Image 1: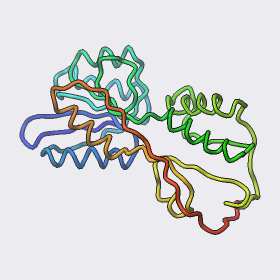
Image 2: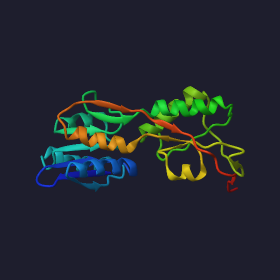
Image 3: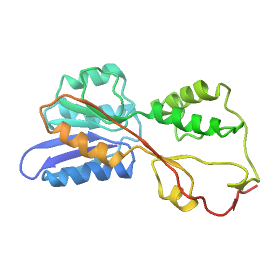
Image 4: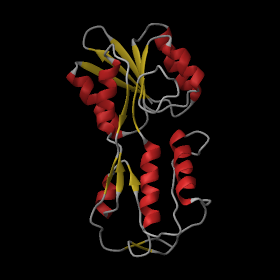
Length: 226
């Protein structure tokens, strides 16, 4: 998803974003404080659409780009960085491209280590995208293999939560609050705010935002569907 940030008079910025409410809220909040407006331009993780959006920078129709989630290859990002100012909201493979990002690999190691130390034997995870298209999925698999040291497989049906299994979520969603299971907070709002500030400045920085693993009091047992 792309966001175009426009000054209340003349200046304009363009952003490429994932569908993350906290991250977008952080961008919107900081943009409002700095008197900019944000226009979201979806790319649906399709490289052709993203590339088409990014040509706006080459044509000087916009002044900068914020990449929050994308399918671009490193060589595309490198070429893009020669056209104007960009900031990544993920760990960027290009050394001289500014970025603000969470260390997801360290977070995954912490989660899997926590579960392993509680002597759980069957530890599984879910992912919204496959490992070929998602860097975070690849990091999750790597952390799993390094911590659990076994392949991921199997299904769970007809169990009771929390007696029979434990859940750890990501993004600190309301569902984790309702069911009372732990969740990793990547502080996406802060990432969005700092990314906008970095984009609109003349500074170069790689800012890593520390995650937080939040624990909550668990709810009463919930029966999972067969």
